[in-house]
Structures are given as structure tokens and as C-alpha cells.
Image (cartoon, rainbow, N blue to C red; front, side, top):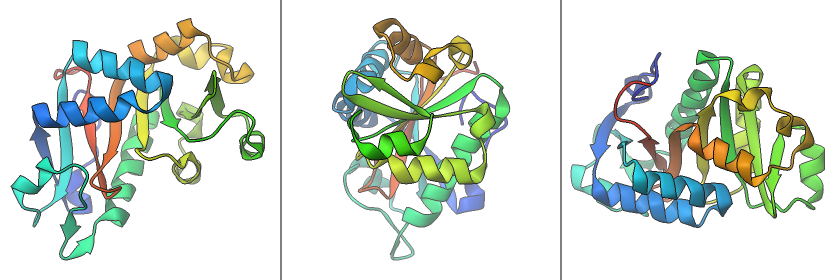
Length: 212
């Protein structure tokens, strides 16, 4: 991941990093704007601090195909859903492992009154009617990450990689976020993963093109 070490090698998953331009920024901004209040705050940040956006493609993908972010990209004639999602989960694990103050936030389609939210456990946040799942540094097990990906149920899937004082605040225990806390999450976000290619992949926005 640009600006964050140690990196996960995309080559291990048969993928190559490709730097994207203005079309990808517009795509990411549009998807964020329809992904709840946190997504809209992140879209505002993307407009103010464009940073860098990349994606990861199989070696045999035609370069021009990356422009159509809503269409599937095959790998050797097959959908690349499996190994792309393994790579996405590896990026989350890498980020959570790197620092004790790292947090991954997942958007969902859930409502705070949905029964499964209470059964999911303590690791969710709400803002109005928005529900977000989260993982802290201590939750970096493979099973915990798979569980978050499995339960988010949102398209487009958004994962915000944030850090800072949030891992020490009381909001992780009382669930409901204040406007100030939501703003803080957006302000401390370093990377945003936005699902693309008909769920076969994603674009990854680094809020700064230099190391942080």
C-alpha cells in the first residue's frame, strides 16, 4: 500500500499494481457519496486532497479495461473474485498488524435496529441510521477479517483505513458516534478501498501520495 509499510506483494496473488487517474477519482468519489455519512465525508476529503489511486489487475487484463469500473475483469477467462478478495483481506490484515492504533471501518446496508447487529458482537458503530463494522489492531486474525467482509453486505463495499486516538476513545464501547467523532474518523483516514469491477476488484485511494 502506498505510503504504508510493510507492503503486501500483489504479485503473490497474480496481480499488478496500476496507477489510475481522474476517471478513477470521479468513480471513487461517486461511490463514496452514496455510502452513508462517513462516505460523504471521505468524498469531501478526496476532493480536497486527491492523493493517489491505484488498482490491482491480473497480468492478462487489457489496460484499457480499467476505465470501465462497473464491469467485471476476467483473469484467464475466469472472474477474479477469489484471489482479489484474498488480497483485499491481506491488505486489511497488514494495516491492522502494522500499528496498535490502526482501525479498519466497513460500511454496511444494515439499520441499527436489525437483529443481526446485536448478535454480531461489540464491533459496530452507528451514526444516525448508518451502521459500520470495525476491526482494531487486536482483531487482526484471519477469521475476524473474513467475518467483517462476510457481514458487511454492502455494494459498493467501502473499507476506510484510519488511525490515531480513536482506538482509545469510549465510542468503541458505546457504539453511537457523535458528529465530531465521525469527522475525526474521516480526518485520520489514510486509505480507502472502494469496490469496483462488478465486485471483482477495487480501487485503493491513498490520501497522500507520499509516506505518512
